[in-house]
Length: 232
Image (cartoon, rainbow, N blue to C red; front, top):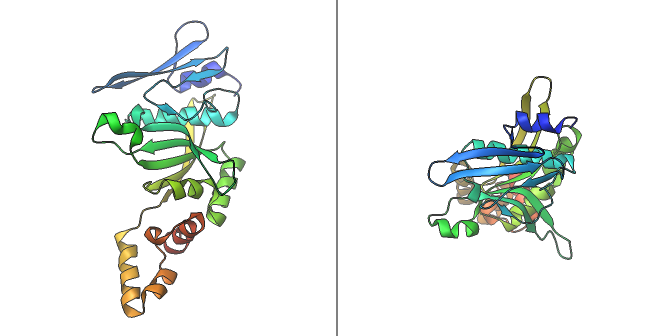
């Protein structure tokens, strides 16, 4: 990013004096939510009620963090409640593994606002820089599940996974984004196919021919269900 101030301006931030930039989002029910960026310190402040697993993406030291910031702004601009967003949610990936962190997790709306932090996930987003990194993660996800299916293994309430990237063209002020979205909820059509196969042959044959997410128990079988039943 050659001009940080221009980048922030294109994202809708306003200069609030010296190195402080702010972006306001208005919510009639809960009031105003404000993201602040300090361009001198290169720090992003995502205040509550957005939940931070840690502050890995709360700085401008890595290109991927610009993508996370743009994606968060896009979600809030579309009307998502900040209380439904978690940045850097931690997961344990495999026995003895150090684990991983999803860039953005969107939670379902809890009936009781006091329980929002404990609501099940709706969407898990992995942010990448555009081009090579996005393509590599997409290829890895298609071939063996990547990070997203590892997260999904532990957050089975999620209905969608997403690989997201974006870039800003400073000369035109345009933002171009790319979102490869994977639905990970069994459809009625797939269940009907399974039931027909089970009736015609047996349960084991149906599970082999039409694997469903509801029968999967780990990253490998979840990925197999998606690739066999849904991706083709």
